[in-house]
Amino acid sequence: MEKTLIILKPDAVKRKLIGKIISRFENKNFNIEEIKFCIIKKELVEIHYSHVKELSIYEDMLNYMISGPSMIMIIEGENVIQTIRNMIGKTKSSESNPGTIRGDYGSHKFENLIHASDSVESANIEIKRFFG
Image (cartoon, rainbow, N blue to C red; front, side, top):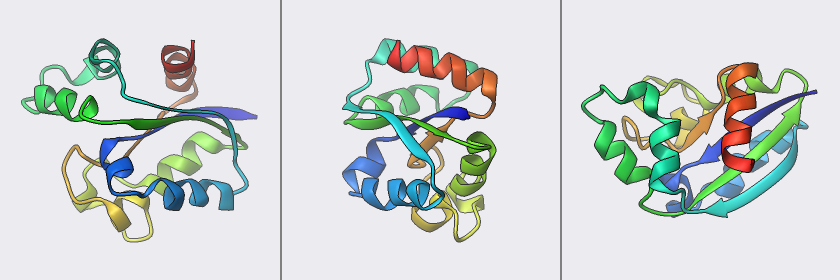
């Protein structure tokens, strides 16, 4: 079985969308292996988003990610990484199709509700980063 890391970001928590989003994963018969609710430390966010450090939105994105609590999960299932990536939609909510999480609930460029690992390699790194 494949595993992926999911972060329901501060806007998803603030807007009370956690249950709606998690139910989509459960409806796909995916299992939540671990889950925690926390405000992510700035140092950890800097590591997690180091690949976009050159972007003009980087500082705003960091401040947004530490602005409130997030729900962090390890989700397990067959072909879970690609399936969930398809379910969440494109990074920019305005480009996401209706029926995707970002297409249905998103309204901002980087305050886009959710993060999901994009490969098995990334999932392994991200799971260790957030769950030890």
